[in-house]
Image (cartoon, rainbow, N blue to C red; front, side):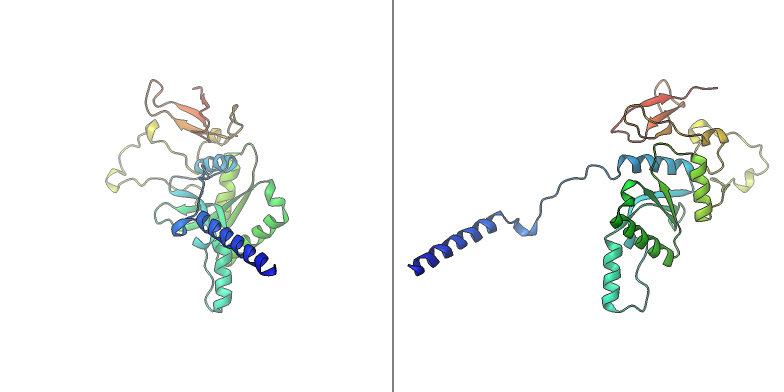
Amino acid sequence: MNLVVIFVILILLAGLMAALKAKAPKNGSLPFDSRETLFSPAERSFLGVLEQALANNYRVFGKVRLGDLVKPAKGLSNSRRASALNKVNQKHVDFVVCSATDLAVLGVVELDDQSHGREDRAERDVFVDHALNRAGIPIARFSAKKGYQIQEVRDKLVETFKLAANAPTTTQPKNQESAPSQPASISEAKPTLAVAQSEATQMPMCEKCGATMVKRQAKSGPHAGKFFWACSTFPKCRQAVAISEG
């Protein structure tokens, strides 16, 4: 009787193993779903703020792996080196500011929302700050909120990353130095670190989704050349508000 029971159990186990094997992905493939967006609405909104706060001789990259910015120092044992690589390769930073000419890393920007108050997030922040500090990479942290003062963001970036507060965005050819200066056309105008005080005012919030709006310029159509406020989450939200002249 016991042999019969054991035989039945073995048959059931064999059937179960066959069923599991049939459901297993072939050729090591695994199912994945798209995350749909690279940034959260708050991160996308703040990216627009950074782009306006920096001159066009700087570039901003998002969602950069910490392991692409720092590496274990020389002299570590194989086990400690592997452990260090594991930690930095599993973490990323929100934004990295680089020089537009050679993409040299100038600093890291972190946007801290309410989740950073959790114990696990606080430990992560301490580790990231420590790793960047040991590597000599400055970090600027901003608290996530509905609106930002462009001038305040700019001032903090200039101070933390040691940026040139009035860095020129273009260089005039020597053979044109004596020529009278000509005002740039509207289509060539780009935000610099020395923008007029009026542009440093707080950006409006989108009435539809609550995200920060960014300043844009119409390139074609009946309103070509005119500036307007556009939702920073475009194309998810297409809210736009005209900027009155004068």
